[in-house]
Image 1 (cartoon, one colour):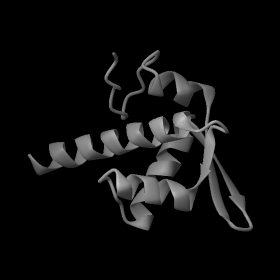
Image 2 (cartoon, one colour; image 1 turned 60 degrees about the vertical axis):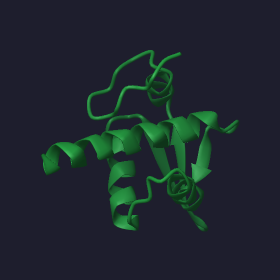
Image 3 (spheres, helix red, strand yellow; image 1 turned 90 degrees about the horizontal axis):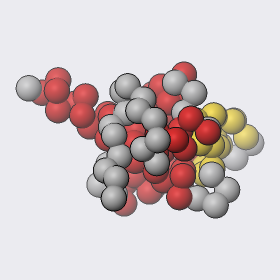
Length: 99
């Protein structure tokens, strides 16, 4: 039961990350701002967990990561945008509620 709950939390967190990025005009945000936004939404994760989720999303081609002098920047990809809007379904990411 615990493993199922943990998996659903990971999938939900991944969806929320995509939705947050999708809501930004620039389609990107800093890793620090993303962590703060997740905390504000009740989905706070330790830094290493968030780093792992972002790496997972990058491997799935849903976001791109860029290291900058002031930290990491996360940008949603076209595929990530499609999932966030419910156009496609990506295994390992919760499905958005449509409507």
